[in-house]
Image (cartoon, rainbow, N blue to C red; front, side, top):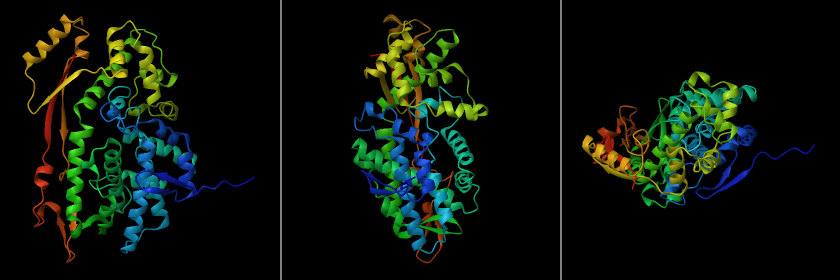
Length: 405
């Protein structure tokens, strides 16, 4: 039997050639759990605003792995001891950090499953893969959970300067055409170092960090929290909740078997058994699209209107401002919607308010440390340079109201 070549090269539009570093990494990529990421859009409903934003979670995590390879190479060059086993653990941990995302990402976390983050589902998938692959993911799981004693390894997976952010800012900027997010990830990586097993940035990389944080702030306001994307996601959350309500009332809605399982059952973090994971692994964006194509003809006005509006981009109007909306304004818009044919029960699905927050740098969560030329470690906010970090550390809140046109 001919042995299969597992050391493949993938051509990526952002970085060029991405090398698969080991046969174990190849086996993980080939697994059905991982291949499902090809069918999960990286940016949810952002394509309603930016038509090019149709790239997938699959591309993103491969990009993250590529940046991790570059980081390991750079840190080793600077004398940081990273064994081959640790390097492989880092590649696997970053490769699998998003494997728990459901269709349209965050919309699923608020409607189909209850109070379960995608990180928790990712961990369950990793544990299941570890069992299948004979315990070869133990180190990757330990790094992912932050239990491995070398703290900088977890910081490369999840921190204010992790490989996840380094890829998604550059990749999402490319596919949306929003140039403000186009960071120089290679320059940033070249400025990283390790002291006392913690990730630090060399002093000459100060402005690269500032550019990175500014890019993140701008991408949130211009792309991730774009009012049309936010409105569309909120409509999708309400659509899925309505589907759950109708099924609980005995309605037989047309949908895929996988989606029906999550619509019919209440799934919490205690229910993430192997059987439930297998069902979750069958869910992707096509399940939601196919369901909406059927539901747009359903007699329930809420379900049919929301489905048709999302499919045909005839969305609710959304207004955003820096202070909350007065009760009388909400009541007035509800009365207008009722006058236009919605009942008192239906109107809450079409007139609603919410808030969105943006904070590029969170020093309470973790401080970015600068390694000065004389070898001292300094909190980035305490450097002599005049950076705009104070503004970037502030949490900006905006309020929105959605209502029918």
